[in-house]
Amino acid sequence: MELFVDLISKILPLYVLVLLGYLAGRYFKVNKESIASLLIFFIVPFVIFNGVVTASPDRSIMLLPLLSFSLATIMSIAFYNIGKMYWQGPEKNILAFGAGTGNAGYFGLPLVLALFGEQYLSVAVLLILGISLFENSIGYYFVARGNFLPRDAIMRVLRLPTLYAFIVGVLFLALHISIYENASTLFAHFRGAYSVLGMMLVGIGLAGVAWSDVDKKFLLLSFASKFLVWPAAAISLILLDINTFHFFSASVYPIMLTFSIVPLASNTVAYASQLNTVPEKAAVAVVSTTLFALIYIPFFVAFVFPLIL
Image (cartoon, rainbow, N blue to C red):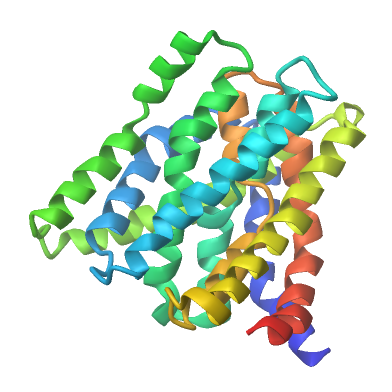
């Protein structure tokens, strides 16, 4: 129980940011669409580029983006098809996006640093890369298809700078091009803004939520995807690797488990707002899973982690 309480104290600062975002949206009328655009088009590309160029060249570690991208894609397609059984409108598209991703960057990265320390940062960033690549390709396409034809949705995906930041980062890494040494300070500022604005965006979204927008089926399926299916998939992969494949070192497993239990991504609100795809329902789901995670994550880390790792 002492560990459980200690873990709650470590993640509480993240919820302070959510509270500040709520106050900004509720009393200062901060616009979530503007914050969302700032994150998507200006801040996230720098974080992704820096994550790629500073990645470890170890081949097994470099499989992590492919692993998280593949898992995200499978989850998204599965829940899109589940959503089609209940909705004909854009709800199924937002459900697919939310099920495929998680708040790995804005929430998961500071969570990993708080729980495990700086030595796990590179593993965390590589897993985030795969999730971000999903968000800015297949995931964004799913959301855009809620209101746009396939061709228009694809064109919107191609306008996302994150894709090009990822490609340029891979080229830098492959060609052994180093960035200016003092640029590390600039990238650190972008990482800080990434986490702060991302968590505040959840609170800003909460300020605009009308709880009459609660869709119980949507909420239930969102919870199931994040807190049941993702952890089950991560645990299965970890046990398979420990007992059969031996691809990854033991340092990878706690980060995989941590990212499998983060709440819905703030970008669910960001993209839904930008594309006008039921942003109210997205905000309710993101806020609800984020509040639930305050208890769920410490419980999972304190009582489930020791059984697996």
